[in-house]
Length: 358
Image (cartoon, rainbow, N blue to C red; front, side, top):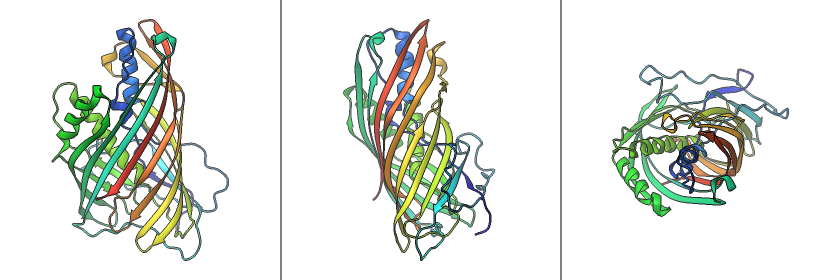
């Protein structure tokens, strides 16, 4: 279908939110505590990759993602990260067809976003403790309405419904409840192209007191990123059952750089309903972490980080917003220095993100 090369689109990174909301609080000096807390808030942010593509590619196509329109602000509304690449590895069996989203203007779609995460943090003997763990499970109801549908752009208005804390540590239960409650009735927007790629978004305007405002901003970022995690673009070519394609992208979130590769395999095509299995590899290249001014002169550097996972994604081509589940697990190792003191922090995390119809 025309052009050769790899299809390039904008790709929003994904972020396991629970690690950013749950601060690790070991019994140690305040300056190191501040650094640890920041890293635990941002450590599980998620998705992207610019790793080289393998040589087994059978066919590919190239298109550039539509440029964000002038009504999208250059900051929050533009999806972060460099252009992603979509590469077809196997077109699958006949019959084949191009996969394109085709919603009707005015359509309405309900989804529930469920996020669960568990993080085990080991700061070693220097922190005066062996391991600390935290776990949370939350749900958020979302409603999408098709406000504008054209050949180049599908604009959805996003309404936030009730949020629920299903499980949380006692120290964070009330904070999560307050923040999720503030989202009820808020609105935002998100735009796709007809390949299923998110082009940009406008977050809700949430007003929270004091320190809760920062948590609310992190949660907003996490909600958008988790939705983007399952909004994966289709290849340009026609595909059938068993088709495989690979998405590589990179991005920066919470001061950390992420590289991700995701491979999709179609397991079912029935009319407008398409289901695919996916395999995910996320890597954090070594390098400095951007810390907020509140931690003063503290510094942090990623030593290594790798998470892998699997999932399933289902698209209804008439509804735009996909649903499915992804599970990621792995380790992130960081070196922290504050006031001349240093330690190495290892975090093992397992996160599950589910978007389901309602």
